Length: 162
Image 1 (spheres, rainbow, N blue to C red):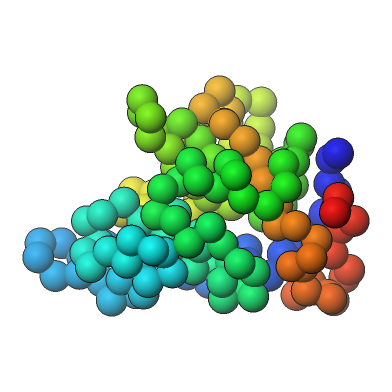
Image 2 (image 1 turned 180 degrees about the vertical axis):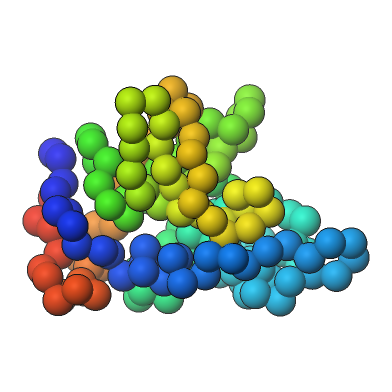
């Protein structure tokens, strides 16, 4: 079942957008904000050199009051929430990064060939980056049980399957 968010911005995407510009620290110094993202996972990594895209997505969801998979592994998002046939603003996007590796971010937009994601650990920062659509493994949204009563713009959340 496709979900239509129209132009409503989900709260976790608003949170993610506010984090744009957070960068990994060069050398042995670690960015405390990225370490905070890591605390949202069971791994609880203590360095910003550990891949942190999933930690960032978990942190954003948890800040929005939505349970995350609490996993530092991007592909674990494929078992979270409900599947979405077509991407909608703010949905979780899991992409193939290498053999048996993945990346996760929040859907922003697309063109014929690329998908734009807001995410962590994209060029060692929180930013919007383009990825080939051919690498998409899946789209996910939280179960409707966890949606807030209204979105940040005052609109109602989408009608999701139970």
